[in-house]
Image 1 (cartoon, rainbow, N blue to C red):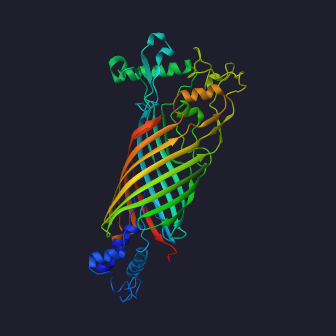
Image 2 (image 1 turned 30 degrees about the horizontal axis):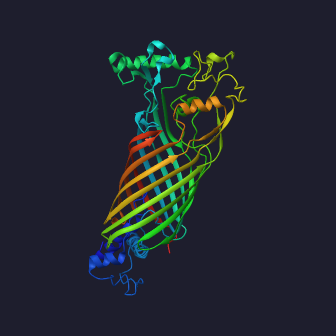
Image 3 (image 1 turned 90 degrees about the vertical axis):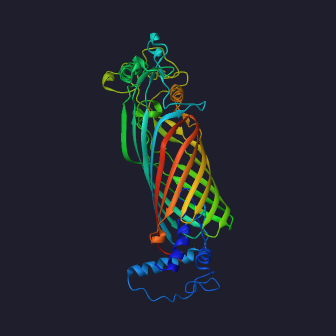
Length: 474
């Protein structure tokens, strides 16, 4: 690889390394030529007026030389686009494929007072037996999971792109019940004794309050989530400031958990992989170039605001077993409580005469609005990009139209309500274009720092691989 080829690749490697979840990069080919060659332009590639001159190199002799000669020409043209930040778009005629792999763990939760605690609030055993006053059943809910997201994007013009995203998820959730006191001390003074007592109490307590005995684990791999597609537009860009708009639609392709095994209703450990209905979303991004030194250093501040709305859908009630059902012993579902009913454990087996409702069939469920904002500071040093971000996500409490007792029960679990998440993010990107390989790699790590009614994700990281392919370039 001669010096001029390396300069073209080195410069536009940053340009082709388009934003990977916010970590944008940029460079100027002419500036790189000046920095490395001591002149404004290499004479056999770019003329004095900036136009591409006739290439005086000998004709390529093999496929590799043809490929590198073609890539050199494309990189030289793209060097004048000055793409940077989260608002940059794929150049016209370019296609990209991205694979995003994520892993995380969960076992804690921020409550309504922003205090960390177990994922599910412990259940007082005094509900079953007054003699157990001061002791609680900790369900010990924990989980791990992640996903694979495959994305395809295409540059319709230099400022207008289309994308399509195919997400899959995997999850492994567990209940490990044990009995503790209000200070977290174990029943019997040991983990083994507390777990044995916890399983016994779980099998005894839940039927007494009219709930089905939950399964202790749930495993799922390669479960389809909500497919989404949309368009992004970069209507305005200067050397220092740029903005972009993205509109998207989510299809109801993800799985909604079985209501008889759903964590949302505390009937089991299964989680949704989709919202269950149509969603429309919109993002507005801004980039401010703070400082740039030739191509070696580029510092960019970025901001993204996203709003989405989930439309009304029908969801199925959990199974309710009537007291006089002759097959009750062979069914699993809500039953008549054997102790006086309460807000958390109502009797769902009889019709609500006051409101004229019953826990049968389906109810209306509207996810509603979700809003998020992310601010990032990205520093590009040659081919390495480093970034720090802070984000906040707020989702409204879903609107439910159905049986009042069921709604109050679901809300009392504090797993179905408005929630807020605040998190920080660190990331890095690297391009292989200097090796004539149009591939970018990115790594990101996130940590939740505060929340409201929100499950905490720990050990939350992802890797991204993105490939660029010129299909119909100018």
